[in-house]
Image (cartoon, rainbow, N blue to C red; front, side, top):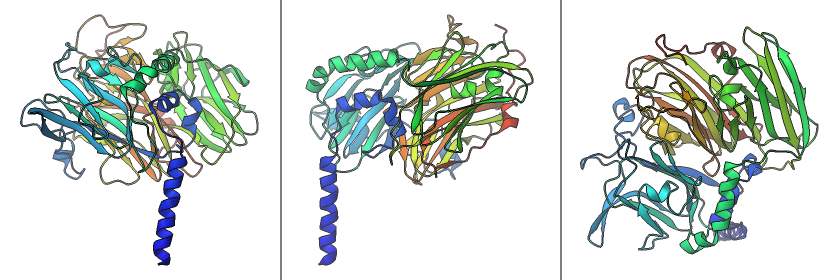
Length: 542
């Protein structure tokens, strides 16, 4: 009897706690999207990030390499079944792409053009919420989610040959997504909340009322405000080979709110790899990353504008991830190159109230050259142990051939699960574009960008239609509503799947927040930093 009463009490306590929690709504999620400080605290309303995609259903376990690396992760004929199921409604067939029962919120969608140069389709998409027979959203499969429909840019937009949306669609009970014809590739990323989490399900009426807020959020994302409040710390120094310059941060509870770094000369493109940023908080080093990989520039100066990271055409590199600490902090820059480098660094340090949910900002780097593309394998970005939130990465690849390199899928395992929470459909899909062999073009968005591909960047835009993926490609993805909380572990692998048997170069910077006990498998690697993958001998000169 005592055991039964205890169980009832625990259930009652849990329900009371859930009912007292702040209700999740479309408006609250929109505001969270631009709340910079929120990302540095573990979510009060816990959730697991999941994804439905057209990954190949033959991929069941890594030991079965033929199935695990099967690249047919789309639906092009009737025998393909890389979706959940088909069903009939009012005598018409619908393909089910997502069917989640429980409270949740869609936070990212991605669908590519069915033909590389044709952004049109007749396929209709339908989003049903909370078991209703009628869809709450319905329209053209691409047009509904590419910024040309009701959901405005940049909350949804036409990426390179893709429709991408970050507009939040919360639901209290369930979400089902269908299409009226066989789907091609797709990804729907969504939050899975604990049972009884209070959620206000998305409605068209709420959307109409929220139009002013939606416009406000879009404007903020496109025009990030420069941080002006706080204490400025700065240095300007000429660093000789193997030399380091450091600056101490104000003592006490505080946080770096904005960090700017500029090199005087970018003519040697390898300088963004050989100059390394180091940051310590409360006596522990949590950041060790080449500046190009930290700010999303890759190898060389490749400007782009994002919400969390940006690189200006004058060479100023900016980071707006909040970096809190309790007692002390130190920023250092080290020049691992052979020639002296002029470095200008400035940080704005503001107030921070440290609490049990506050986490330390971390950034690490992994590089490898050469990377053999046969046999196919999963290349580990990072493995984390402990509790925290994964928030983004910036990848630079050196491809020695013209054929496309990025067919490989991301696979993200959380808290020791048997199958990845996230199983994608291609490296370019993870970075929110498609038709990678043709999409060697510059593009930018608040949460993702391709700052460089082949010979092109923001300063040298593509005007031709050639298919050439030689040389360096840099891809960035920073997360907002699609952050990935983990309680005990997170492992992010990117499949190496090139169309050519060759040797490539990989370098990736990763960002996450964690508690002091949270660890990673990445350690400073000065030797690999200086092992810059060389451009192919026949690479054209700019």
